[in-house]
Length: 262
Image 1 (cartoon, rainbow, N blue to C red):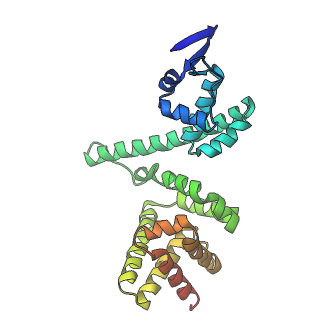
Image 2: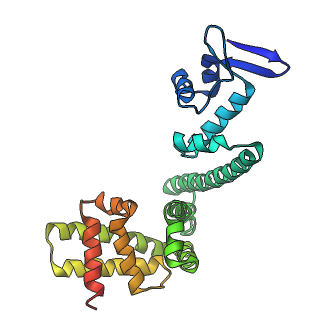
Image 3: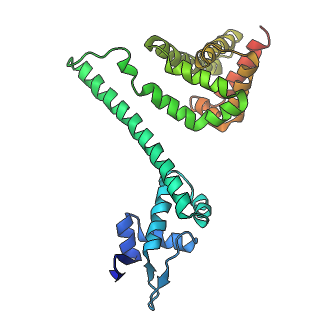
């Protein structure tokens, strides 16, 4: 039952707040159990009663969850959350959501125009075919690797890579994607039939891929560092090993063998 205490202030019992927020009663009870969201009061019958302040806290908790934070992280953040900090967090989150919306809108427009093109209703330029696609890849790469790339190779190397990718022509973009496919296929061949010629081939392919990704800037030591990271960093290792167990290690060893015997 929802009931008014004064003016516009509302109190909610568990089932009503759960319905309002679109979550389960069990979730609210669990939040109370772990001390994440404790109701302001309980009735004589031991029913939980949530006030407006609790509603605001629940909204922020759900915002944090939508941002991908774990409950233990949210609990720490909620302890020191005042109005000023909440405002800054929400403004930052809004900016991220707007960027994501714009990126998705570009992809939706691209798909719609491609469908129209395939139906013969319009003609797409080569430039238009890549609207949104490269931005989507850059966005994902930034989320995963930006800080690490800057820490390891510096901001100038990071910016050079981003600029090179943005300025790729259709032909270069296809070539870049094709190199990635060839690398995986050659690694799979090596796993079936391990010969020196295939190891040298995959190393050269990866060298070309690196040079393209880095805007034709190349360093032998940096290349060796990258393939070492493919094995040491679970994110990179998972990318290669999803195509076959041990592929990340095969690539690392092949590049080391190739570069150290040039």
